[in-house]
Image 1 (cartoon, rainbow, N blue to C red):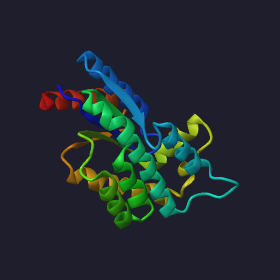
Image 2: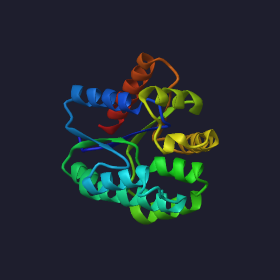
Image 3: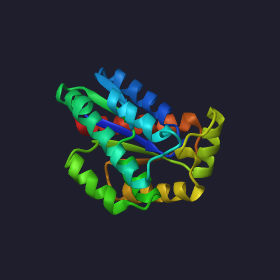
Image 4: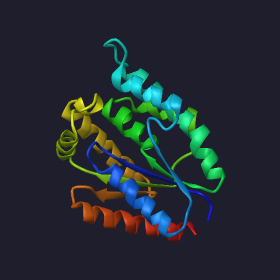
Amino acid sequence: MSGKFIVVEGLEGAGKSNAQAVIAATLRRHRLDFITTREPGGTPIAEALRTLWKEGIGGEHTTDKAEVLMMYAARTQLVETVIQPALAAGKWVIGDRHNLSSLAYQGGGRNLTALVETISHAILGHFKADFTLYLDLDPRIGLERAKGRGALDRIEQQHIDFFHRTRQRYLELAQANPHIVVIDAAQTIEQVSAEIQQAVESFLKSAN
């Protein structure tokens, strides 16, 4: 079976790390070779951009439009140096976020949909995930979960309306794309894990 690109998406606190682990365990059972990635990040340059975006320099943080550009700079670095070579070698890739994040966060949350779509097309062209799991969760629940992990980072400190806009955009995009499966992340971790495994197993059957 040729390599495929599976992506996990969701708001803060939705359980992406657990989802990646479930997907990884499922691929291992099928004896498929895979790597994991995260965005923004995944390469030294992309990780440096992630730190710069999150922490800023000397109290200065990126503007909304600069944020979009940095996200795609990090993404194209990861895609061209890690993801595409892995897929070409027949490996599977499990991504913690990909382009759907920018369409939802910067497009929906920041109200920059036209800019994001233009840059997305210019940078990625027709490259996209083969299968995406979107972990849907009420932003208030997700942020409470995030607080339980420690201090909130810069993106987690955005106004709640930002996350409602982001979630709405995620749901709109998921409804329009048959390759995106929506999982109710408000369920117990056991229920969520079971639905993720079932969804991945179904995808594996269709990918044969």
